[in-house]
Image 1 (cartoon, rainbow, N blue to C red):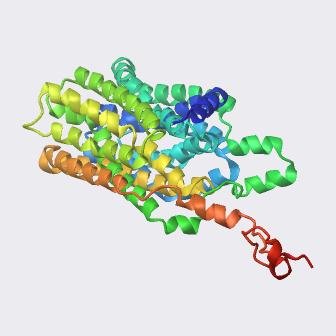
Image 2 (cartoon, rainbow, N blue to C red):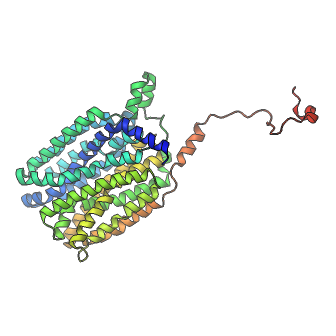
Image 3 (cartoon, one colour):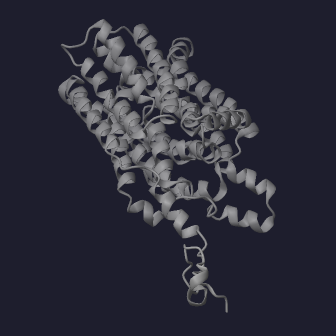
Length: 451
C-alpha cells in the first residue's frame, strides 16, 4: 500500500471509528443467542429430557426463516439505510432472547420461541452492520469490515465465562434475561449515537429532491444490477463456498462444548477453550482484514478458509491429544472468525455498493441456510453414531473445498470497467479525421489549406 493510501486509511479511521464501534457491538449482539446455545444444551437436556438434535432443531428452524427473509431485509437496507432497521430491531431482539426464559418443556413452545426470535433478529443480521462500513470505508475497507465482524469473536470471548457464571449462579432462565437485556442495552446506546451510513450522510447534505432519489435504492452508488449479480460466476462461487463453510463451522460452533466434553475435556476447561476460540477468532479477523487490504483476496480467503480443515482433523477420536485439542481450537477460531468477513469483502469487490444490501441479503440467506443445516447435521450424526467423528472427517474435507472455490475466483472489479464505459459521456467524432502530421507548406492547398 502506498503512502497516499496509508494517509487515506488513517483519515477514514479518524473520521469513522465510532461507526465501527457501533457495528462491532451490533455484530456481537447478533452472536449472543447462537454463541451461548452451546452452554444451554446440557441444562435444557437435563431439565426437559431433550436430545441434542431436538435442541438444535429450534435453531435450525430459526435459520430457515432467516434464509427466507434475508433478501427482503437486504432491499430494505438499500432503501432506508441500516439505522432505521437496526434501532427497533435491537429492542425486539433483546426481548426475544429474554423470552427463552419462559421455556416450559413444550416442543411447540420451544419452536415458537425460535420462530419469534428469527422474525425479529433478521433486523440485526450482518447485512445491517456491514453495509454502513462498506459504504463509508474504501482504503481501509478490509480492516474495517474485519473489526466489525470480529464482534462475533468478541462475543465468544465473553460468552464463555459469562454464561458459565450466570448458569452456575442464577440458573438458565435468568441467564437468558441477563444476556438479552444487558447486551441489548449496550448495543442500542452505541447504535443510537454512532450508527450513520453513507446514505444518512448524503441525506443530511442534499435537498429534498436528491434525498428522495437516494432513498429509492441508491442508484448513485456504483456496482452491479440485480440481473448482473445473478449471472456473475464469481458471486456464485462466493455463495457456494460460504454455504459449505457455514454448514460445517456452525455445526462445530453450536456443538463446541459437547465436542470438547466428548474429547475428555472437563466443563471448566471447555469454557476456557471456548473463550480461547473467541480470542483467536478476534485476532484472525483483524489480521485477515489487514491482509485483505494489502494482498490478493483470493489467496488470503482461500488459504484462511481451507486451513479450517486442519482443526477438524485434529479433533478426530484417536488423533487428538490435549495439545492438539488446544491447537485445534485456536486454528478453528482463527479461521472460523473470518467467514463473514471474507464473504462481505468479496461481495463488495465483485458486486459493488449499488445493490449491496440486496446481494449480500442473498448471501446472508445462504449463511442462514448453512447455519440451519450445520447444528442439526452435527446433532443427528452424534445421535446416530454416538460420536462426532464422521462430522469431523466430513468437515475437514468440506473446508478444503470451500477454500479452493475462493482461491479460483476470477479477478475482482470487472463491473467497474463496465460501469465506467456506460457512464462516460459519448464524444462526437469530428467530421474529418484529425491529421497527426504537421502542416506541410508545399502541400497546403491539398491538405492544410483552411476553407
